Length: 383
Image (tube, rainbow, N blue to C red):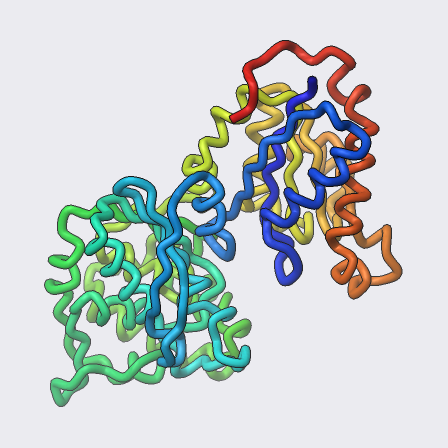
């Protein structure tokens, strides 16, 4: 019996990681009915981070928080024992914007701070915050305010939400926020290493996707620099890797004592990936597009690296593949399957995503004897 570990990320804008696993499994069942499949949906800190934790056995915790533009927004976080997993994208990210309308000046990270407080009050002592897909560029000011920090104007009033409010920042007291998280182990999980400021910073790199034009990007970087001078006089946090994540929420979390870690590594740990890998004969991973970005901290690249290091064949499935055969081999990927070549165009590939993944699953099932041999080494059942 061949043991397959299927560990894809989401196909962004199309299918969740769990849906990808399910579709591949249906196809596999047709051509390799005796194969044993273990599902291990993954993420890299952005969309799907909470889903990955839930798939690994954590319990869903629904809650209503302040959405990115101030309206109430329903979201879900995950709890396993005293470990909580929160996801910025679902709470205050681009996907949480009402009607999808961008709000580059007013969007706030406040709801994520409310999530942190909710997790602490529920008994969490180790909190993982998945960063990515944020709607705001507020340096985490909203998050800090939700935790009790005083961010004040020259008149002693609380600053308004978002980048526009941050421009008026004149006084800071972080003590209440630090007290709210006393005794809490905080991890910032994401796949970027950008500092807060400059040409590689939060505004320059990620501002445009949130609606900032070139002139507004320059102004935003100046606002962030002025705010950082008050929040972080030494400049150490602002210069740190990951400070620019999620419009500067990474910076705020560093001020609160968070450890910055690769989102892919954190999620694979939560999913007990290495233990599952030890009992597998073959690994399948993937995401919406396998490209150069995949090779720089994305979950599928880490899955492939670990699978190859264990001496296992690693297959990758994606909507589109732009990596060369040499790049795939260098990443530890034995073979890659795309959906685009099976459709007339991108729109059809997306519309027929599950059907095409089932087709790929059938192909993989037929290829198993050549990939792992007719008699895989005897191993314990996959969890």
